[in-house]
Image (tube, rainbow, N blue to C red; front, top):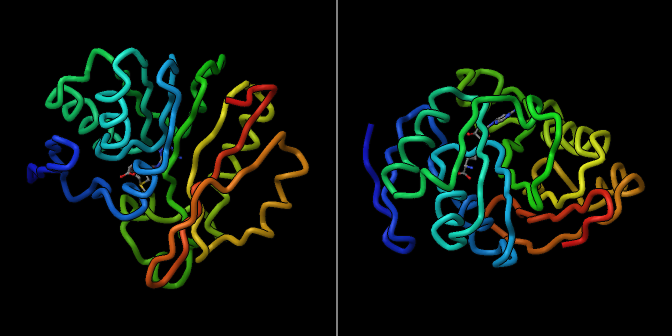
Length: 209
Ligand SMILES: C[S@@+](CC[C@H](N)C(=O)[O-])C[C@H]1O[C@@H](n2cnc3c(N)ncnc32)[C@H](O)[C@@H]1O
């Protein structure tokens, strides 16, 4: 395992090979996520190294975070990286599939930089840990649509911030979910060499924060 320095964020993170190394999508999300300073509770799914919630916790000192990952290695790394960066009292860490173990959802915001590539010829050969980091189902966005359905059925009042990639998703795919949603907004787009990333905000219930 190697310790990495992220000087722009005054951050050090231990990241083993089996845990997602923060990439363009991670920093795109961090740079463009504008949460209210008085936000009390945030859940992050698929925390990976923990980078997103750790940076947010350093900025939003009064906010409480719950971070999940389906990978037990990632979950352990999030815990130890929170300690390393002095934010462990603000962040609870749980190993679970999305938010499936939580009955009463109460966060004002949920964040997920999800695995968003479609399962195809190349990705089906990947080891399971890499698949979990990268692929979100046959079409690429089933995992995130699954979460959306869960949030709708749980009648949560919250906003979900997530990322879609043009490799798997098109704005017309919004139609599949937008009729059931209060509001879906593309906050920011990032054109990369081989894909376009969309940072999307989806409001549930009567929450509109
Ligand atoms: C693209 S990585 C993002 C990691 C980190 N948040 C970042 O932006 O650098 C996706 C993360 O989601 C996790 N993941 C995949 N499926 C999951 C699920 N069903 N429930 C919770 N976490 C999941 C993966 O283990 C991985 O850590």
